[in-house]
Length: 541
Picture 1 (cartoon, rainbow, N blue to C red):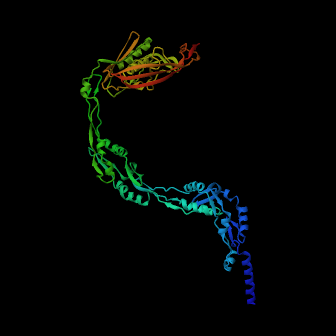
Picture 2: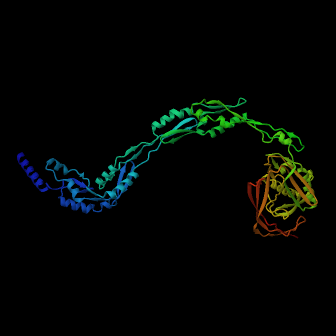
């Protein structure tokens, strides 16, 4: 019986061998298409039938966590059908190999027809899309503690390996997987460790102390060192950078108690002189000269601050020899009522003789104080809510405008002034000023190197203000004209306090002040624009 079974199996093997010996081995597939057991012609036809459009389908390429795609037909790839089937080989004569083919499959790589001119640019593109750039590590100091950011490896693929894999396996239904190569960051763990053990450790080794005069000590504790010490990645190195200016500001907050600021001499209105006082300031350039080396450990972390004199800009001798022989600014306005004239004379008398030393600021409200009945002012015409009205102190705006123009032509710095809400014809358009107790002020600064004295006079319907001192500049004024005119509206009012008015149109204007030195060189040129509201037409009933 056993002999008979062997004879039968042998006969079956012989039949199977003779009938399939030239066929593709069983279990063979190409691109997921089973061609096992077929003749070579059948296998070619089957592959062409089922994979004929495969070259137009996108192929996914994977490297690590990155993916890319390419379309074979657009990448110079096509299938060599005959060569692919030939590569699959023929059925083996080994009975065990034949038997295994009945129960398993194996994928055969495609034989491609490759147009290198079309494939290479696609390989370069895919390789770039599969690449990830490495991330450099970094070091910083926060609240006196070292903080590091770990470096991150990048990856790249070998274009030659990628080209071979794509050429052979682009029909693999599972896509193509390429082993990436690691790309080391420039600032890696070794570079970070070197920085942490070196300049970073030195920077926070202890406090930095500048010893000032009068037992004043300025200390920067390690907790604040990160405010001015940073570590930059430069060409593969971690380079410490020390911001001396920020550190100086921290020290300066503490060393300011050791400084003495200069005080200019003052010429007082009674002719007396308050002497000047020279000061002493920290010489920051000298004090911080070696500061980076102190931070990074090459120089002592405790050192003496260096000081320099701070001489007063206006001395006692200059104050004593001050002269007021020249009129450096002058202006006159005309036309006022009797009551307004009283108030103008009152404020002019208060201001007459006022001295403003170099660098000092003059505030009209601050100089005169309140201007009420107790101070000798009376009721006169004012502007209230855009209409004529009566109020104590009326008329002082005319003096304010006169003083403003005198300071304007003296070339003094305009700190604050406010034109009237509507135009008053006796004043230059865009170059006038109003005032109000506690609210609207006229303020200017003496930018000359000599003191100035304000001289006032009132009479004959005129008020004149002169600024006396030493002439240092020339001033020219240029008006920009009038535009954007607005017409007044009619207001019908009643009552004993109603003051009729014919109204005045509103408009926009500008004024340009040009300041030159005595040789004609322009020092400053500024243009101010102002819009006047229309004064309403008031009808009283």
